[in-house]
Length: 207
Image (cartoon, rainbow, N blue to C red; front, side, top):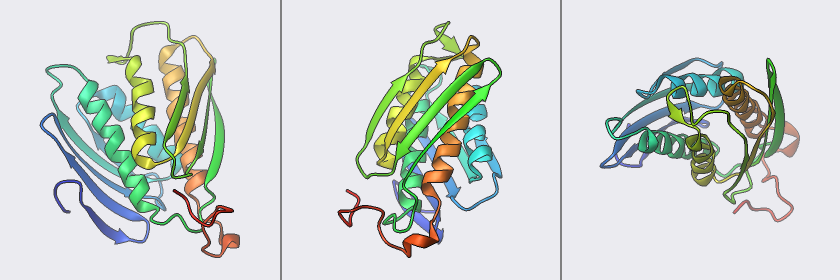
């Protein structure tokens, strides 16, 4: 595994990525064609739980380890974990030839319902729509939920729309969002044999 923001390729869709700053150190290994095996440790139990939903329901093999300045607050850790995970998806898909590219998924979690739609267009953009009952969920400020999705979209270079349609319990709302993210990522990153390795764009490129 290389240092800095380097990449080590284990197979065509499996990568290892690191992000080291003065605030955090994050290491990620990701296999897009896995079986949902994951080992996640960020120092934030609720974030670990949410990332587990992405891996298990997206059938990604994910190993993620992060350490950060949690003595200040969770902000830098949540942000840099999202940035590094987005980098891993970006690198694992390479030139994005043959992928489905666009997907959406709606997930119920008891009384809550959430939707995620995304497009691996190469153009980072995020729209996030959720209302919360409390300022924190699982010890994480709810404002960081939106920031996670924004940061992920930035480095994964995708257009990402996430919305909580309704619900009462903030834990259920957040978990439905991350489950929907995992399922939408799985669909969009899937290789479609009918494309015969072609870039899924009428322009011929994804920028």
